[in-house]
Length: 217
Image (cartoon, rainbow, N blue to C red; front, side):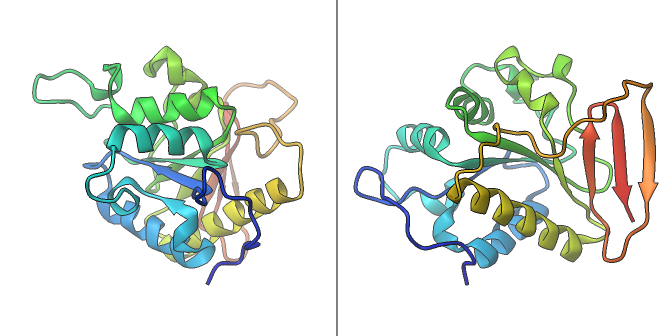
């Protein structure tokens, strides 16, 4: 059952899902499906846009993807181990193609000023560096991420649901947050370091700044 307010003005005669799941099909499929089902149960299936589930047969695929990416309140970019370097049969990296749908979705949401949250799937999947991304989506590398760890999957999915519920509730209340910014970065620009904090019920990791990772265990 959805934990979010039901009252929301429809756009163009229909309610647009608030959360857009952007993903690459061959990448971490089983974890991606778990994320989709967990968020559907937590937020309500009508609040989640996932191309394979949300686009009806015979609809204009390209038009719907672009519109949903532009009008969503929050885009979760699901990044697994194969996301960054996935290649086509010709050997060209998919992200380097102008018409790559993952690239188009992210660029559209960023241009629209929507909140974009990288969601790292797995225990060790890194957030891509800006230099490894096309210029139109290089901003993704500087955005606060969430992690869904494989070793603590139930806890990670629950934490993801909590965070998204909080972000969407803040949007309902008119919270003046800027897209993509969660935890404030550390003030002291010291060399790269890793900190480990042990807390009850942990298991997820998040980035507090580009050069610092705090892991909850």
